[in-house]
Image 1 (cartoon, rainbow, N blue to C red):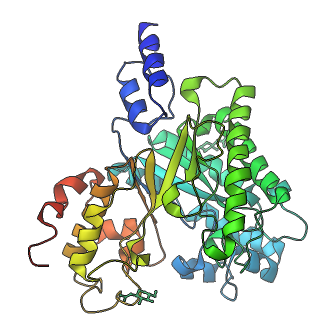
Image 2 (image 1 turned 135 degrees about the vertical axis):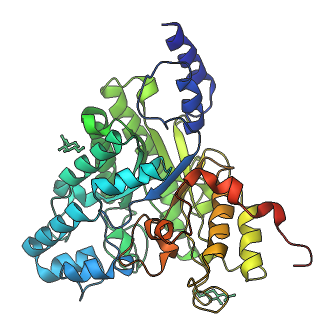
Image 3 (image 1 turned 135 degrees about the horizontal axis):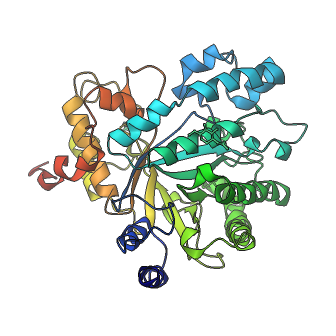
Length: 411
Ligand SMILES: *[C@@H]1O[C@H](CO)[C@@H](O)[C@H](O)[C@H]1NC(C)=O
Ligand SMILES: *[C@@H]1O[C@H](CO)[C@@H](O)[C@H](O)[C@H]1NC(C)=O
């Protein structure tokens, strides 16, 4: 009871329920909820990219095995090979892409969190007759989070493919189209239903007790061409998403200590300030994606420039860097300076510099855990560990970081 009081007080005092405050609260001795990070106060994790939304560019072999080789994305493949054949092919994929051994290995190498990108179509009745998505994924999500619970892994579930597609020309939406159609009241409502149902599932299915965060939308539009859509989303979708998730928790009488963090792309993403219209920021959390490979402002654009930039990054508080990689600019990727072959030592430093910087915020989730093939490990954590690039203890970033030597004099 006394512990309970102390915990309640601690939780009440902190502005937002961060993984850090939850870890502190747990030291009170009583476990009120499993939706916290065990033992450590930083998120160190990986994305399970390609588990529920296959992106052809990082899974060419699997894509071909599924019979999708003539198609660009999940929609095109489902339409192209037919619903029944797609359901069967994706079923095999969902069953085999991530195994319990993967989750065990993730825990073994010092990672504490996974982010699971999911398409809205995992709730099949939200899909319109005119749309093409594979069916039958949900039991595999139930199983996957069950493994995470069993092996002590904290989980972020992320609405990664939204109704109508939220981002132009992206395989990760499931339907790559030039003009995103998410930004309508009808499609917002479908996404809100997805969030409501996922919230219900998280709180009522015993496999989901280590799911601590629900991300309402991955990577919405942010360029000048789509400014109105981004503004509409910030004003209408974000506050409703917050409201519908918390209303669902209210209706289920979820105890305060057991509530979910609700995650939005942070201001750094460039779609606007997610806090602007939220009814409250209690339990709100923010996602920063930081791909140095897509940053054309790195100077000089050489190894020193990459490390110096990485070392100086600070993405803010109540922020986790939900996506990053070891990649570099596409024009440099295969040059003598940057080709991955034989450069394990430099890429290890590049990993450590980034991870250390992101741990000044609330931590990081690498994109991604696994890719097809193991040759180029710059997007593939599992292969990078096998190759000796990323250490098999994810907590070593600060001790391996070269940042105390950067920038080197005269560079
Ligand atoms: C929960 O997860 C386990 C795997 O740990 C799985 O075998 C089981 O079917 C899941 N339960 C439900 C209700 O989905
Ligand atoms: C980085 O890549 C882009 C294309 O992806 C290219 O336009 C740009 O020039 C590259 N920057 C450098 C310095 O190579």
